[in-house]
Amino acid sequence: MLIQHYQNSNKKKGDYPDELKSILDFEDCRLAYDEIKTWNNYNPTPLLSLKKIASKIGVKNIYYKDESSRFGLGSFKALGGTYGVLKFLYNTLKKEVGDEVTIERIRKGSYTNLISKLTVTTATDGNHGRAVAFGAKLFGCKCQIYIHSEVSSGRQKAMESLKANVIRVSGNYDESFRVCINEANKNGWHIISDTSYESYTKYPKYIMAGYTVMAKEIGEQLKNKSMPTHVFLQGGVGSFPASISSYFWQEHNTNIKNVVVESELAHCLIKSAQNNTLTSFKIKEETIMAGLSCGKPSLLGWEILNQSADHFITIDDSSITNTMRLLYNNIPKIESGESSVAGLDALIDLMKKNDVVKKIGINKESIVLLFGTEGATDPEIYKSIIKG
Ligand SMILES: Cc1ncc(COP(=O)(O)O)c(C=O)c1O
Image (tube, rainbow, N blue to C red):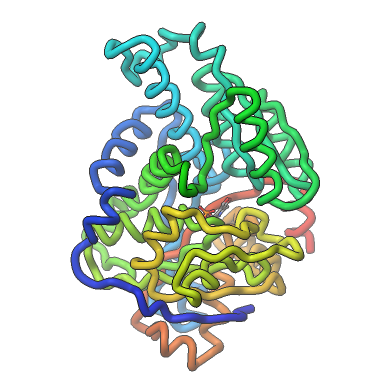
């Protein structure tokens, strides 16, 4: 259910600003796509059309980018964390070995001995850690993952099955991140985080560039079709919504309206927008949308969203499981995890709230793009939700 709505008065119109190009520019996105499309098992994920649901709630169409099959990891995060690990190995080896190092040689296993001595680390709610663990296993370095007390044991096991050493820390995501930074400094490990802060921006940039592969694919999938009028982007630290809104701005410079959706229980992005400065939110209770449970925006993600987002909204957990079942019962069946349905959940409720819908400008002619950012990333929990 929709809780808050805020219209962003800092939204910029016109060309993509130069100051944002230093965070994420089209060339970074192109390089990420050119690399990722060469990986084994790379396939564009489906862009589905939810015609029935669209007509029921009163919009022209809903596109749903279904990330549940991405690289067999169950979420879009595989595009970012894995690419981040590869870029880290490339930058490190280039310094140690010299200019002969190429990404292709790394992929082909030319430096296995050197790589095996390196350790990458991150804090995670599950999906990003899984992507980093996958990258570490794929390219042969060690991996140390920090999770907080509420991360499900299914998500922990998924990372352990990729050979990561997973440490559970008491407290929430922000605390697990603090421990990760301390341990990395003490042990000489290398943080590959999906969130950025003042002294740490390099790898989050690559990770955001990796996420834009989804937007690139959508551009191809919608060739000769109408572009969406609105895109709903669920935010945790904000790297994901920032990357997609940035890409569409750069590629199409259209009037697509970006609506950032957060959990009311972790609403650091809307709070930052309302305060017109990056602001943390103290998480008191965990949302069922585990991937969105972040109390501090990514610095770079926030800088983009501050200018690219048209609207920020928050939702509570009350209808998330119903929305998951709605997609499960769709034809074709869609496997959609808790964080994945945030956009659809928000849209359905929004259509019942005439005043907010008017402000966002959604009507029967609107085409809404949603991102199904994860599948059943914890199969046991997913099964129990679907059974009802
Ligand atoms: C499934 C899922 N959707 C959306 C997000 C939000 O991404 P970000 O934290 O970059 O805003 C996450 C983050 O972990 C996630 O796991």
